[in-house]
Length: 220
Image (cartoon, rainbow, N blue to C red):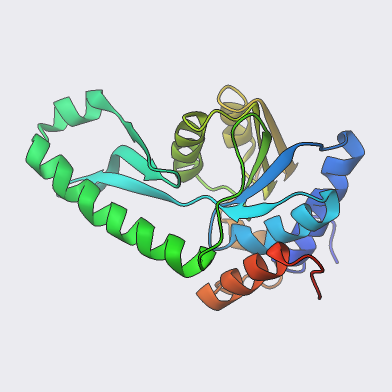
């Protein structure tokens, strides 16, 4: 394998776990994955450090008619963050905002039910949280997740990813307590270019890994 490539997300997770363990021990830590691609990476990290694994779902609240522009986000745990400046500049009415939020909340709740399958959410308050994805392109979703996660009162939030553009990693250091990026290639174009196998992670794979992580004796 070339030095700047991962075989797949599980391989990336094992490499990320090795880096994290070389830096420090991770007591009182919860691993949160951004689904879906972040789950296979996070599973390997959680197994290596002996931490509980859970998903952290983030749904962007897009400006009506300009959905790519984020006016806020909602996330696991009933968290809502709003960019009041964007709402005001875009002239979004309270009714329009409520409609967007209702739609995104329905999708977030659907995914939480599908992925968690009745399991209690992993503990966050007062703990170190490792927030993990399979890579970062712009960082927009992850930034929204960071803001939402702070509302759940973790002791410390560490962003850990296999690959991201160097400027994105630098920017995230002002928002997270620590950022661990295995690769920060200057020629970054897309996360998938650094994986030999970057097939889309299925809902079934997410459910299987979360169930396995929750088992007292996870089996490969």
